[in-house]
Image (cartoon, rainbow, N blue to C red; front, side, top):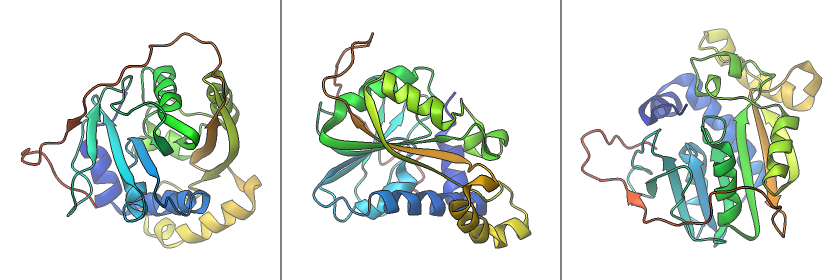
Length: 247
């Protein structure tokens, strides 16, 4: 099940723990993809907290938010790029995306295969996708006070197998979020230490998330699917009474 967009917004933008998680994941993303000059960048699920660094240099940045989750205007103070969509039918032309980030979109979907099918469809030649999911072996997936405690968590092997089934080739992978999912002052003050330690000595324990960068296999494997259909995007109404902008 998808979390409500208001809960996701409140976690990432209004809680100390959420801001710490946003910082860690965004740093990992920028380490993998330090730039997106002239490229088309797409986020699906709730990837908005990660994509702000690409707004200035990318040709286009779009945040798709699935209908069961809901949508919010983003980014604050700039023209809206958030789009409400069906999770099985993305309003994006086939083969036009250079970089795709999926967070809180795969493990919370009732149709993960259809999500992966759409991810495969929209990626262009040489395009890359980054899938960010809850780590089944980590502490964060066992705590339902954070968004990573919802949906179906994956191990690295499970995610890799699922991606291969839908035509993706894993290029590299890593875990992150080694700090405990706690608001206690001690854990917040020592968060940086745990991230550094977890990143350098992986055997001390599993990170809270799994991150897998993948490219698409050509030709695509034969598999049952929903077909390729593109629908008109539903942009966020700027005058919605519930629309609360996020950073």
